[in-house]
Amino acid sequence: MGRQNQGKLNWLQHNLPDGLVVDAAWLERQGFSSGLRSKYVKHGWLQQVARGVYRRPPAKMRTAEDDSLRWQNVVVSLQGLLKYPFSLGGRTALEIQGFGHYLNATGPSEIHLFGNDTPPGWVSKLHLESRFVFHSAKRFFNDQLVAVTLNEPGETPPNNRGGDPLPAGLRREQWGHWDWPLILSSPERAILELLDEIPKRETFHQADMLMEGLPNLSPRRLHQLLAACRSVKVKRLFLWFAERHNHAWLKSLDREGIDLGSGKRMIVRGGKLDTKYNITVPETLDATV
Image (cartoon, rainbow, N blue to C red; front, side):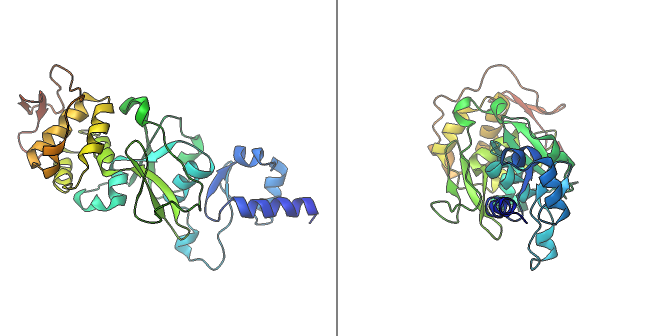
């Protein structure tokens, strides 16, 4: 092998962490032409996991489970290496932070990502056990709360493990053998994102059980998020559920600047009207709507 090729291979081993994925455009920008990529695949230095998508083959001593491509590898790659401003949110963020036992998941697993950009087309072509669902963060929050603070894979956050807080109701959790950072919504932001999915992807019953298990939310963070939230439906639903469970943090929640809009919102057909928040809710929360 020539000295130049050996140097490029060393660069790749140093800058493409084992287990993460990149696309052909990323490799092209680093000087790896189509011909060179094909050569690396032939020699086993790169592995093509989909058309135009590559990763370094996992180390031989790792287990079969580690060898498989998981959705976390893809998210870390999107956020860190490829610089797509997506954050994990909604149901996914709540499950990661230990609230999954309140959610009765059915059907295929969905990974909810929020951002402004259009996701790369190759993401949907990967052979994963989970399916990605992308949401527009700008549709949901104003510009102040859309930006995502990203971190290079392998870089250690200041607080090590334990949920390093970030601006805009986001946080950083570490995942995997190498403690890769995952950017995700805090419980305060994630519950608002989940409520937006009622009644299409989430039910009133699921949301009610989840809200019951959130006694430690931050009133300060909630006020920031509710004031910046564009969805009247979500804000009314959140306050309705909060009052239903009467958590201690509700008394400290500053409602100044939280615009609840005007007029009625029909959230569920055939339900009853809550006259305080002008939203239709099920007659019974045991309903599957």
